[in-house]
Length: 243
Ligand code: 5HY
Image 1: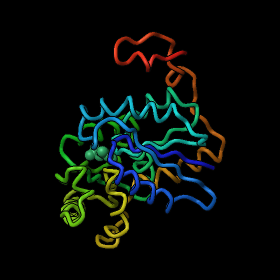
Image 2 (image 1 turned 30 degrees about the vertical axis):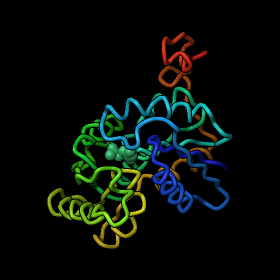
Image 3 (image 1 turned 90 degrees about the horizontal axis):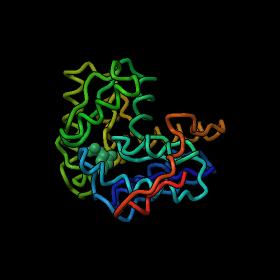
């Protein structure tokens, strides 16, 4: 089995970190291919960055390299629905995966993400996925995404403080880390705070393996049907769907 995990931002060090976490979570014999687009934002912080990450993400999906499933490794599940229109293979978002796993092991969980501008996209996804009632609160740690790539930054300490507040104030019984860049922090933070701390990358690998192993593929009826053939103009002409 081969799982293609895509970091939609262009920061290669984060892609490598995601690759390492995915390989650690994968079952024996499951191959992990980790890529990021060559063009686009170096980090996705809010709706504007997300918009400009989509062409590169969708090209990565379209380049399909013999995988059995895709994972989108951005906690906002950036481009997940559009990717499912392009792919016949299953496409798993790390946010959606983490929310489902958290709901299996705790009555209420809180999410700790990066900046406040990421709160609404995550909250909207929880409503869309039908899991908003299980999430006590989505919190911003005020750690910028790329601070997670800086050795010696206070990111880990800042995120832990926000987790402690979630446990003290939200009634949270588990914590979901709200950024792919936090993937290497989950184990240490779980040991430090004493409740389950979920990393979306690992959750998505487990789900992608399961869906692929069952031979399930994205339904192409209605919602995720292949894009209709049409000619896009200007710079997007190369992306014109052929139907
Ligand atoms: C992520 N951004 O997982 C999201 C998290 C966020 O570049 N990778 C990013 O801050 O929304």
